[in-house]
Length: 434
Ligand code: ADP
Ligand code: ASP
Ligand code: MG
Image (spheres, rainbow, N blue to C red):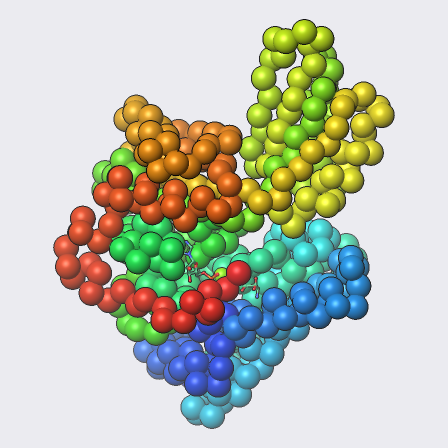
């Protein structure tokens, strides 16, 4: 029985951490241990292993463009399976557990199926179960639409956001994200074996990292944590070592120049040729993409200096949105009177992130020189005060990440040995969730 007024703890376990019976029992033991230490424990679970990928594949076997509402009905089942199984395992350990769907847990969202946003958390049912001394398991990655009352899902990696949103609603100070690596690293440890675990990352760095491909924390979970002042502790589900604390800048020491190299291999580029050079054209192009629900990342357009004053405009979009984006742009071709819609779906992106960059010029020059010397052609560049991103060919991403990681000396050698002692390196590459 948990103590009334005791600290509420939110623990989230990712797909690899609940992939089979042994791992579910292992997660159950960790959850129970926390309850026995006196916490009111809420655990958010992801679908097991590659279950979500399998469900997506099953949908595409029966339909080339699955209906988004039905897609969410399907995808939300994965997390439900994990929670019910974990509740059974916890009950067998002598504790009372109850599993809840996202809807039952009060996760209220908008209606954008497959990428819904959480609007509100009505946590009274979770509170009531905790008050009765139960451990509460909440199916991650899902909610219920406030107007249609249909089941929604929160986008890939969305269980992180469920956990942080619950931590906010329940007044937990820390949200613990248990995953298959020991924390947030200076690069994806699957790509760069010498990457080092970062003890602390600021919200603003983590936002840039998640937005540029570090899938270890879903971008929205970091936005939510920053907005509600919730510290995230991202750590290994396989050992007890400390992970990475993501928190406010004021709480952290001076930041290094460059903290991490991130990458993405799921980009596509669309180029519109022969665009008329008049006010409103770029706005119309971007509105067409926004109305189609496509998230544009980089945008490049130059003032046309050549004869005829026609411009080319390139944007990058997630590869999965390429078909929808292409259709939306072809539909306004006649209206705007441009030339062609060209696309390339084999693009990738590599980014350098570091809060210390703000006050130090020259990082971009070094990064671009390093990539040039490695024979990597840079196709687009964008910057923010704490990030430099380069769009490159997908096949060049690995080389680019490794070269930048070495050039900026981000590796393990840079830290004290005890800092990396607890690093868990996943043995099976296939275990990487997509
Ligand atoms: P979970 O199923 O626990 O949510 P994810 O697969 O979503 O796990 O996220 C963990 C994975 O994120 C790691 O296995 C790792 O390959 C990848 N990753 C990418 N970039 C980073 C990074 N900078 N630090 C740590 N992990 C990273
Ligand atoms: N199961 C979902 C996914 O694979 C959500 C998550 O794991 O966070 O994306
Ligand atoms: Mg994840």
